[in-house]
Length: 273
Image (cartoon, rainbow, N blue to C red; front, side):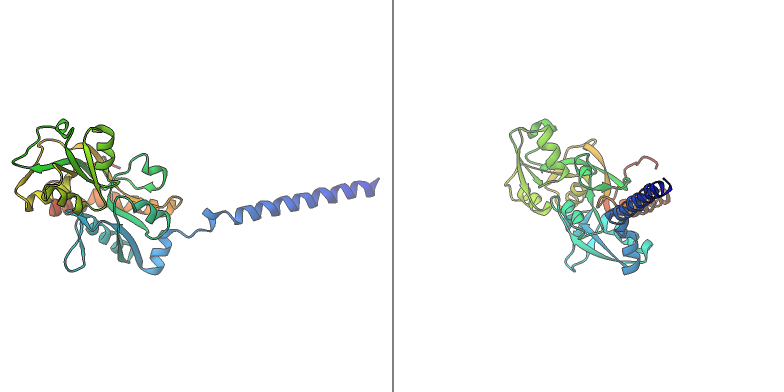
């Protein structure tokens, strides 16, 4: 009887050992536990890869000297400074920002990125560091009086941009002409290939300074929205750091000062975080 009970106990002990071992093995192979945060990688390598636009006036452009300038590069350089790292800019557009993040080719996207619900299914967004809205730009000799006037007109937008998404939804009767680059969408207006060009208000504001033959609708921008940084899903440590950086940027007034420097107007009011 004693031997029989002893055998049963031995079997139970062995089963528990195997169960614990199996659980440990499963836990050790969990990707989220093994993956190193982008924050740690950046601190170690002293390099941060930032996706940004090369053709969004005011926000980010690649100048004749091969240097990125604008509000987003300004923010990126401050972020790099806070990490003791150098910035490696990676040119992006409205279509490939998310793929760049998902494939781990950049650490963060600082690229006039509107945090829509649809985009948030694929990547994570920080709290906002700025805000923007859509504005139409058109020739002074061929003005429009309201957004409803877009119906039946050729309207250029950059592919995958907030303008593309919003006009597709709210103005389906407009004849959208999509371009890979913002600069190409603007040139379509300048060369008379389209009637109207629609983009973020900061971009339009900068373009109007240098192109006096055009104007835009007065009043509040259409579909105003926040601008945030995008990161790959699953790296909470990196997301936490970026959110803290943005809070300090907003509270200190440094972000608002940079915005006024680049756009010549007061920065949009943001909610307090």
